[in-house]
Length: 162
Image 1 (cartoon, rainbow, N blue to C red):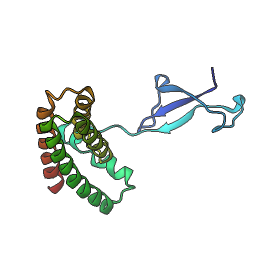
Image 2: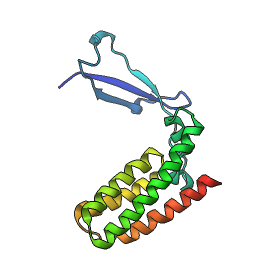
Image 3: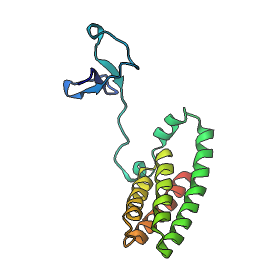
Image 4: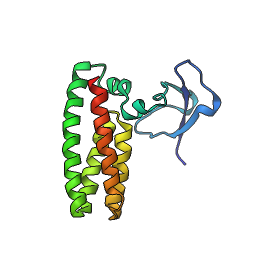
């Protein structure tokens, strides 16, 4: 067994509890420390998104954090995402209608990643389920997932234009 470092997670209030300690494998090439000087590393974490439909649909704070608080860049990224997602949904519709499971899996995978990148967990989760159907070669529920994705994208577009 290799060496481990201990990480103590600290929440936004500065509270860390023993049950929040993780043991993480340490790679000797990346970290050169003697065992005698190893101490827990403190990482500050912020709470995840609050419960609620809009947070699952779009987490603005997380996206802004990823984009280093650049509102202009966020607007550009979201505009590109909305257009690209609509194209993916059109392509998915054609692929589902023709029974092309490979294209369904591929396009759903792309949509899943793009949605996660813009912090739309609801879209990413639905695309993941559609991707799994494509990979399994079973498109029986694909049409209903496509309808849900289309509705979520419309809701996201509405949310972002308010």
